[in-house]
Length: 117
Image (cartoon, rainbow, N blue to C red):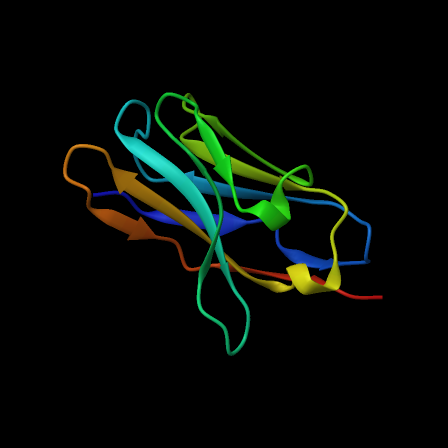
């Protein structure tokens, strides 16, 4: 089992940047595929980006070229660098971990990102 804690959210102006962090309570190396999802009010949770244990990444089309997911296995932390932010990026961002052996999924509590002038 792993617990996830997100941080780094906040208020940013359009065109600005934020870096989100997700700290895991245990080792994520070689075991957990990691991802970021987001959910805006009244909308379904959607994929932002994922990074596998082998460092393969995948992004939702609307985030390609603006967002970068990375992982530091030594720190048991996953990051989401978000650049060129738009008002429509306003959401609660959730960290997700999927055990590659059991497929069990874990979620963090979320961090609010608000893009507004």
